[in-house]
Image (cartoon, rainbow, N blue to C red; front, top):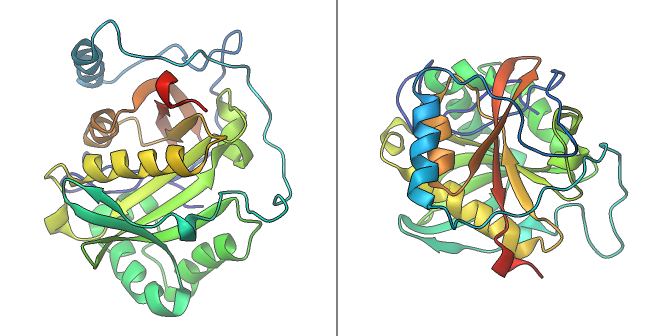
Length: 269
């Protein structure tokens, strides 16, 4: 998994971008099993979160918090996999067009992913502006693993335009730093072309993919992400996609904003 934040929806680094990639090993801790921790917000972020909460209104649905669970390896269930067949999720309509998560094929997709990783705005967060073999190793580690992370190309109206990693947050090192629950599912995102950034597209696609996760993964009650805390545009994109700002967590490569998208009560099985 990549060590730092991704760029998706805003302008040049270091203060812009949206999306996440894990950098675990910090000191975030919960209280009494709750998943909201004490926050020390940078200038501008507290006001942004407060405004989002005000917009949601006092009756906005919240799912009760559950106890923390440790990360542990799991075997793929019989007849399935750890992420419920991302390849079969299919396309979904969005305000921006028809969007499809397509699992990466190295021979087909690595040249494009490599070009995106060398974009300075992306490289500032993902730190994968590296030779082809390093990027290939990063992708193959997921493809050849146990299925807890699936790298995908995001295709919008037939055009490859973003790179995603859908992963089991409860089985990731991230789970050591927040009160993870079984089947928590994480999202990492980068938008590859500068022309697709800074126009709200990241929030639109994040909402669509979070909806896909919650629809296709019925055991999953939450989608999580961990953008760099300094990256206010990134946090804003997650907020616009229905995520809430839950906590700060110290990860090896960054101090992150833990973003959580709950399944609404009416969407529970």
